[in-house]
Picture 1 (cartoon, rainbow, N blue to C red):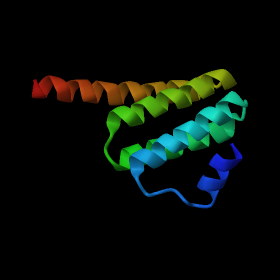
Picture 2 (cartoon, rainbow, N blue to C red; picture 1 turned 90 degrees about the vertical axis):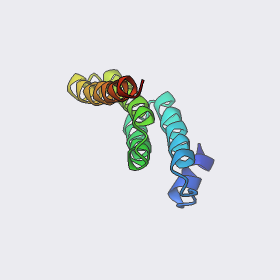
Picture 3 (cartoon, rainbow, N blue to C red; picture 1 turned 60 degrees about the vertical axis):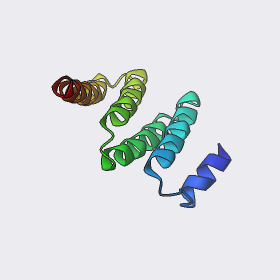
Length: 102
């Protein structure tokens, strides 16, 4: 984890939204496994914002599912509901787009 923290804290990220976001998801997963939930949420939300900037709705929604799982572990059901609603809305929008294009 120290290598992950050092890379991110020193701002060495490549600027590649997808690669950086995936790296941040990994960091969030590591923090979650260590019960460092606030750090996990922060990393996940940072990843989600990178996917959002690239209009990658499905990947953004997947990250929101990770955020809601952390809030469930914390017993913060209101926040978990908020992120589940965001994820569901993103999935719903993608489904509508796919139906229109088919």
